[in-house]
Structure formats: structure tokens, C-alpha cells
Image (cartoon, rainbow, N blue to C red; front, side):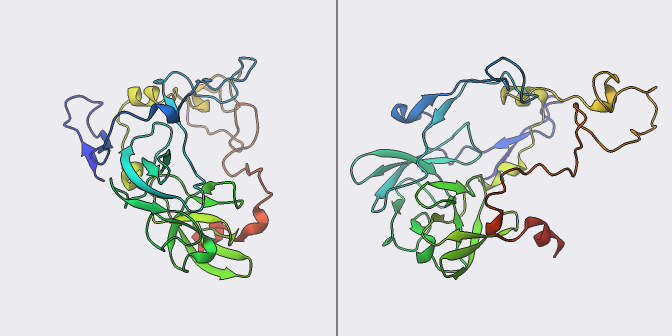
Length: 278
């Protein structure tokens, strides 16, 4: 996939790039796998803003993606589709029973590609197998955190993990962040790399594109009044804040730990921070 360039006809177009949709084979999704997606604009059931800088944006439907193909499934890719809800592409597949599914498309999937899932599936790109059947050193994606629950990790565009080793009931996997993590060897994973690798290189270029994505403007705290933000106030000079960076509610930020889901920390063999320091 390549990046599409624009001529600098306006200030917004200068430097703007977008995805190349040449690999997408249909613009019309399968209606039976669509669901209405209601926009909450960052507000809770009381109408209060709980996530800032959200609102507006184009309407979109949600695609029902199957992250847990049944063992024994043999399917053929019929179309590669765009999904407005994720960075990766989707593949519309038809299984041996004539049922349709959406799965995350890797960079090897084309119309007519055959996909097999299960213990006896060949060790080939796009197939889905348990980690116990995948050779060490293989690149994988869409990995199950809990066996049988469906793929939850390594699903975004261009993402890939590497199966490093197997020890007893666990497999060591190096994640895209560099973190080395343990997974149960019966957990399923797909072989390959998620497609649309150039997604991270797209330059938005204009404020309007961000608004159509449902993202509203962000205002810096230092340009606010003192009543509106801990960084606010002052005479407009470069005198600094005099204290550590804070959120609008006075909580520490920039370096303050925000990870709350610690129940899987015991699976981390080498943290992503240690991987960067090496």
C-alpha cells in the first residue's frame, strides 16, 4: 500500500496525504454484518462530558468482526473492505457452510486467498492456529489473551508480534511495543502481519479532517485563565508554570502512571520500557 499525495492547491492540501484505497475491492459492506453505531460525543448517560474533545464527525456503521473463527473453518476471501472503526482493513470471507464473516485482513490477503483455522491448519500466512502449533520465530497477529475468547492483542494496522519460545504451558511473545509477554499455548493467533502498514504515515493536513473523524479542538492550559486550568493565568510572558504539569482537575500528568488493568502484569516477562533501554 502506498500513500496518496496531493497537489498544494490550498494551504490545507499542502503536505496533506491520505491512504491509497487501491487494494479495496468493494465500497458496499455486507448489510447482515452491519450494526448501527450511536455516537455519544464523549458524554455519559447524564449528558456530562466524560471524555473531552469528542463530538460531531460523520455517521458510521459498526462491522461485526469475527475474532474467534471456529476450529475446522475453511474460508475464501471474497472482498477486502474499508472499516471506518479501525485502522486495519477487513476481509469478507465465506466459509465452507456458505456463511459470511469479517476478519482483520493481513498484508497477504487478496481476493481468492484461502484461510484455514484449527489445530490441523497448515502453517501458512493468514491461517489461524494455536500457539502450540506455530513454530518459534513466526510473526503473528490477533492473539487471544484468554483461550476461546477471541483475538484481543495486535490488531491495528501494520502490527505484528513474534513468537519467541515455548516453555511448558506458556509461549513467549514479543509484542509490537518490545514487551515480552507470556500467553497460554492453547491461545489462537493468526500468522502474518496486519495490513495497511502505511496508516501511521498519513498526514491529516487540515482541521476539517479531524472534525470529520469526530475529534474536536484541544486548547492548551497555559493559554487559559487561572480559573479554568492549573496552568492558566499570568501576564502572557514566558515565566513557566512553577510546578509539575497538571490536568484541568489538578492531577499530575506526563509521567504519572495511568495503567489500571494490572491483572495481567504477571504475564509480562520483559517490560516495554526495559526493551527500549536495551
